[in-house]
Image (cartoon, rainbow over all chains, first blue to last red; front, side, top):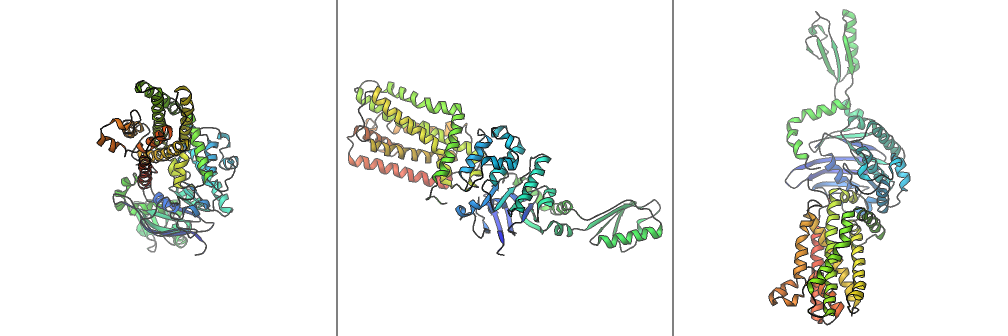
Length: 314
Length: 254
């Protein structure tokens, strides 16, 4: 484990009032890896990330960043990390450049303001006051501050929320570029696409617990693939081979399987032998989105309670 | 919290942007510049001419110094701390390298500098216009003023923790203002009050600073009084620093 730069062990975070937002989360992130924490609103993503950033001490368990406690050893850890909070705060009456310069004043080895603004594509807006920026531009400015000290580890809490599609693509490109330079990135997102695009590994949080983790491929592999088609009139679903575990509603059939290729071959062989035309045939592996929605859905019963409580615990 | 090693570069960087913000906020700046002047005039006219120009002048100046501390340091800073907290600036800053003390000091820097400058102007102008003698012990005044700035900055941080919005800062800063104006000898020397009341008033937050400033100007205070005033001030500083560590709010209530 010498190579892991972030380690969370049985992490817990309780808030006054008894609500526990993080309930025993463990994972580790290797150097140079892009790791995504996925979850619906209120799953505990931000509460977890704030513990990793060292903004608060966990009520149970342990966090290590570079092998150090990021809360107690703040002075040693901070010069090596860059943070982008879910909701950044800048004085609204400062200009973009002034904000970067202020941040540069509290950052070791800060890049020049012009360089970092170029990096996030804000050069044209450098003399604009922060209060006049759009939501997406604010996110870019926040990202600029996170990158200012050339951090080894970057924490990005929902980095592209509020960005337009172009801003999102730019940010993704930037994260990939940083990874190529060896930066470790921990990001939270509720965009599955974003996790699929960027993450080497990801973990799905639900109700403060980590329910699934692995590479995007591993996570989707835990979910069954799906074959869908419609049988012609007069061909009942009962005539399908019994080995295919088909669920029919009228003429429409859905088969869920862990062995997509074998089952699909069997289905197509049967269709050729019997001369049946399978209308609207569609076969696909599970997507991350399906895996995610299934998890969220299967646990919804327990989740309803937390949904509204969490609005208050960002 | 690594409170002992402060990084001057980080404090000035924060102070510089805070100064930019102060200058851009016309209303606050105007208030900070004009209010103390106004108060000094009010002070001067309320004291009347009963006790001779020299005494009145000195009372005006020492009271004026107290006013500057209250208006420019305390009222200003409570607003700044609350504004930065509500804009999530304090929370964002805490993700960076600056320590908690550096963040609070940097934010306080412009208000503290402005107050010191105004007090210097007041002293020089006062000597010229109000016909007041040169201070007997300028060093004592300087130390007292610096302690006052430190104390009021800490009290501002405490006050900000129970101030929800910038708009309510006017209200939450009022108690200290009134208590100090009435009880810390800003308008009238505490000696003119009944003995028991005077004894209590000596223990108010700004009373020690005011006693030291007055003694620095006119001399004549007994060593015991000075020691008492110094200890009272020190005690208040310790209490408020403790309260800041304990209760200061770095992010908005949600």
